[in-house]
Length: 371
Image (cartoon, rainbow, N blue to C red; front, side, top):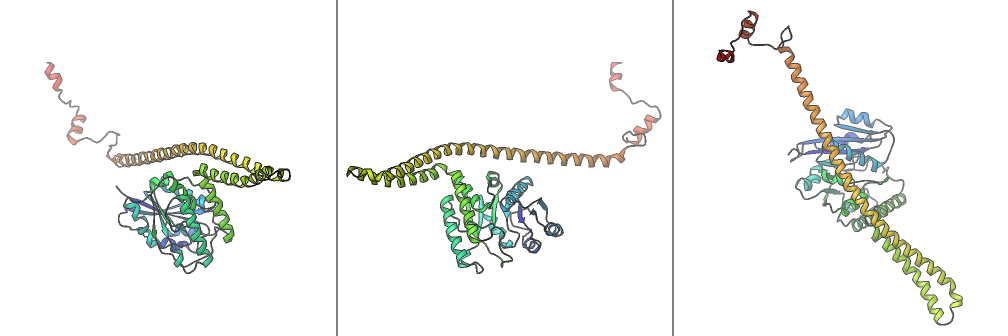
């Protein structure tokens, strides 16, 4: 079966770096029949689209306004699926990742060993990463590994390969970044996730994803908490509720001890505070139960969405095949148009045409038999 790989490149004002990014992408890969390039222009104000067209990329998708990296990634996935991609490779438009490592990145998927492969930049050895950034990268990846149940050393790497089935099951909802959400989501869906070491190119510009490290930490932590709560609501709210109950038990215990010693009159504040925390803890636990029920409903919706996607893609494929057949029929009709004589009748053998013009009538075996 032919294998098609589409390399998608989300871009926002990348006219300076896009040529080298495209040039680094190999057009021939062993085990792959076709490699195509898709550029997602996220509302660029420079000549990114013109450069992409001049470079001869296969497909271009444009956002009228800047929607962010996560939205561009989601747009790219949808378009790659509609184009019939068997494997989708995501890379950055700033030429951060070495395109020559794409064959290594997709190898586990081609071998049937993984659904998603994440490129490990080996940040501990990256020269242009500061010590603080390396430390945050290590801590952040550790947290994502714990939340997702995966063993990916570079959780925020955007250089990753995704199989068609995995892409059909992914539902990116974050407005910030897809990297951590995708890992938590795919890990909780029991997808096979692998990691391979990849090379990086020298830094070309500062990151546009965040303005400062504290901003990045805050947004990443919010995303991780939101996505983990979406897929593990009972566990999340249970721990929160138990923390409230444990905290509320301290002042309540203090009041009970004082009450048994006959000094409870002066400790009524502890009883009020502890009682409030206990009520909040129990309420949080009940919210967790309700969220868990909603979680089952979300799973059913995701199953339905996956089936709808498959039906839609199958229908589009059938329509495309029908159009191709119609075009072929039209081409054949155009070629056979010259086979007609001046009177509009199909051309006949010379002897048949001559007999017809002389008024001769062909013998009718059936009539002779009746006689």
